[in-house]
Length: 386
Image (cartoon, rainbow, N blue to C red; front, top):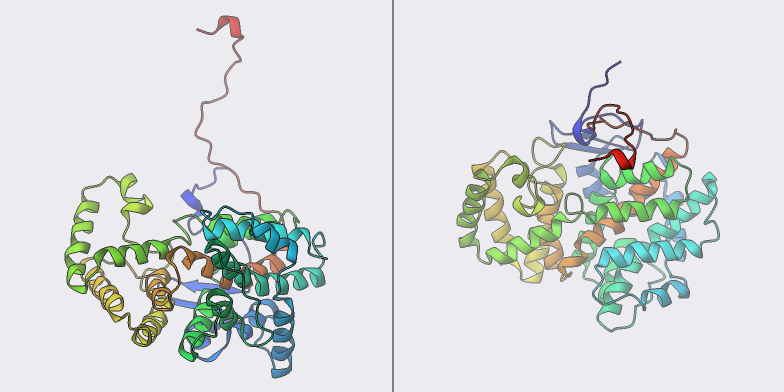
């Protein structure tokens, strides 16, 4: 029986999942039935972690228990820090993170167990440690000593602390917490699918997360917010934005379909394989970007981004995605451009772990290929080949 081929598995239902769903037509995103806009406004990241892993928002006691577990798990094993000190300073932050996650798996007491309780303990450690790894690597590559994580406070606030070596402002801390909530999960995106494919083989959690980070590094997935910030800095002034975008769009119109598909020829921060209207996370991020830009004195970049957004909406039907205004937030927080995608990973680890725990109860993922090679043919001995 012939099976319909869909390039890139577009719109193919590959798994059953109760974790997250996207309504691309309406521009809605839900974690376990809760709207992302409600969660971003009213819930903390730790509450969302519990929701993703356990299926329900936590009681106060459950939240206090999970928060304490995450805080206790923050410190990195010394062999992991020793390993990170050997990485070349030119390594991309995601390359350093990918390697550090692999190393920390060597020292995890539950490393080889796929039992539910062991997987949950590993999920706690990875969710606590990955933001610390990102901050530690940033300092190490600058020639500075890593900052020990705090023994209190939220995960996102602690991330800013280990990154900068000082407590963040209240606005910055709340902003980063919302960033973590918004990025915690997004259904079966490329890195989550990589996680589930790996876990479906019954490999260990660390191996699956290494696969996810490697997938996230590609500019067609998580690398786009770095490109957004580079574009906005290239534009420079809000007054240049409209002409810049029109010039880029004109150039794209003259390209072939294959050329337009290349990441470097896209307008970063716009377009999405699922959303037909604006990404709901982008609306929350826009207001966050305005507030944190005002505090940081970086309104010029925010105004440039606003002009780009307005021009794109006037000239195209491409929806804005989560990468666009998140790049503005990171700039206002003083976060280097090449750390943007590592922040994505620092938040998304909770979602990856949720999908891993769910996939352990499912079957092996083994799709088929749409074969485009030659038909069956006879073997020709070497001496007879022309």
